[in-house]
Length: 477
Image 1 (cartoon, rainbow, N blue to C red):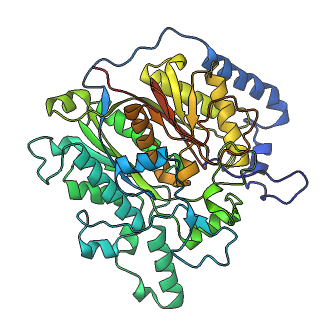
Image 2 (image 1 turned 90 degrees about the vertical axis):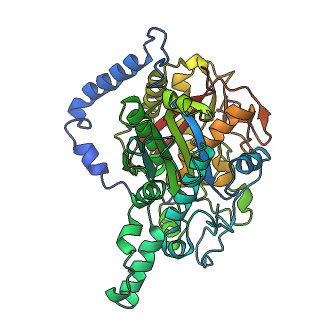
Image 3 (image 1 turned 60 degrees about the vertical axis):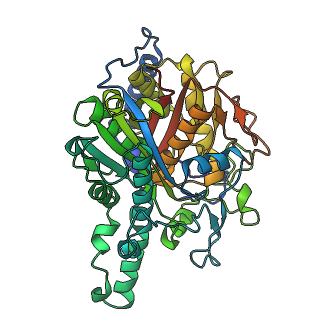
């Protein structure tokens, strides 16, 4: 997530990280007697990363090329991918007052809440009433992606080998609503009042497991939880299952339903959230000088990945190509990004190398851009280390309209990225009233722009220093 705000000098702020004292004492990196070695080590990594190598080569083997053949979404803009992107293009805000529970005593009282959600046709009524929302969102988005890939109808035996098709559906926080209900039942009544579904439905892997059961897919199935980098980690893992020959097809993405009192209160305690209650729709404002924190959101974004060979064999609709991805860790702080940007810049380079892409080929970045004072600039500083000529690159922030959907953010933003490739239109970054002068990128401020995307990258970063970058392009035989 990498989003906490810095307090003004001399003002009240977050308590020091509990690992801060350990950092200072560590003889490996932080002891003053080894500071020179540390500096040399970091410089050597930076120098190595910046060396120019021979022109990267794209994968040619159809068994290892990974294509996108389906997409499904659950969002504050609805459950239809085309409507979702049309509303992004129009610059709408999906942020508004939280109505799900009493927020009158919270200093932040708004978010990107999903309203009027219906799982009709995708989850039977009895199960629907039992499930935590994060599972409901994941099941609906996953089944919609499956349908979009021409795999609907409940009969997949003729088109795919179920033992070679899997699911990786991640969640940063899992079944928080079910968890809080169980704790409340225990404290106010008795353990006897805890739901028998309490344990299964709080687990972060259960959305992935249930989707696999519903679709009959018996290949690799698990979840990944790396906070707000979750979805991209899932994409990276799913593609590697296909490239290694372990799977032909993977249903992959992220789902989150964390707009509940305990999570809202927790992020407020971290001083991570905007408190612009007087005008919620303008609260999420990436790269604006007056940004004051991120806005919580929720939803699910799921894609179908296939090997090119498998997709062509079954005549699947090929929407885009996944070129490559990378994941790494800052190894620095639980919540703050590295000041030198080394983790993120290295992750971007590794993603491009994995995809056989040169920096000059990238002309669109869907940024993490959470609307926090520290995080927004840290990301741009890291990007500047990789891309020396930014004049052709356009960069936007989907969270300006959806809020931050945590573990689902990368899934929703991957869909926005693929739609940008398909349509030739980039959605705006709204609420750009007073732009940061240090940012030299075209951030598609406030109004959509027509732009033929060559190669796009999508960034996601999470608490714990988890970095992830994925690259997409139009499919070219």
